[in-house]
Image (tube, rainbow, N blue to C red; front, top):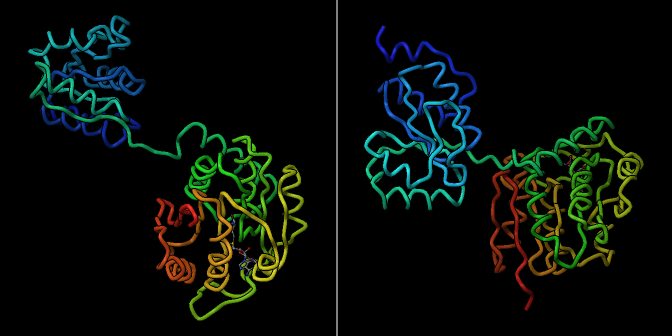
Length: 341
Ligand SMILES: C[S@@+](CC[C@H](N)C(=O)[O-])C[C@H]1O[C@@H](n2cnc3c(N)ncnc32)[C@H](O)[C@@H]1O
């Protein structure tokens, strides 16, 4: 068994794919002398685990971190040094594993390029950016999931959709106007919207919730979702669910009737989740003039084949408007209302 095979035989659990790249590099080139940039938690963990599992095949020279220089390293052989001290160690370093992420990354690369460390091999070992793992969002989503499960609610939005709502609620918080959802079903995304409004201190805004609460009332030749889908529901049930949110207003009935006669608005954020062509086209026409400039219209099912009618309605309405229809990572589309003429 050669050195590389010996390393391969060791199992290190829970490496993300970038950490695994370092592991694979060491497998092919054992004994590589590594400096880590950034004394992060993953850096400390990596040094500890690689050091104990790979022994002399992993040579951690130092961890470079100006703010934490002088602190004890994760293992004795690997001191935490400042960038200036690392320059003096340049001759002992083969590879720099960059463990940091975000805006400081380009700063770090600039520092390396302007120093004796220039030309050293660089490997990025930072983690993928996962917005859903952000602490604030993750806590809100976990709370909503628990509350909805406890009340037996079935819902058709996922965490990526909720993340869009979270971002746009934050983005539009300071704007004048209320919030509305069209297509509530049993109230999954509605509960989350209400919770977000509380979280961002928007208790003075109202949250309008429009649905038949008895299923899809109509279908056109452009729609693939059938009449009466989503019928396992009632307005009383959703009213009960939302009873902890005094700013929620439940509006039962066919939206094409209940909303055309209403004078609600302006709106800073609207969430359209009706799946069907006719009602989505109707909502584009009705909502567009009632949006606050900078307000966001979110179309939940834009990218999905099963709700093609929604995309046709949105594209058709906005084709001669100045606003672009932008697609989010969750498949929803959003439109930011331009200032009115
Ligand atoms: C995909 S579900 C909404 C899912 C919900 N947002 C969630 O988080 O689970 C679509 C909803 O749109 C409603 N809907 C569709 N067309 C409608 C219309 N013309 N008037 C009122 N409600 C309508 C249906 O009753 C259904 O409850």
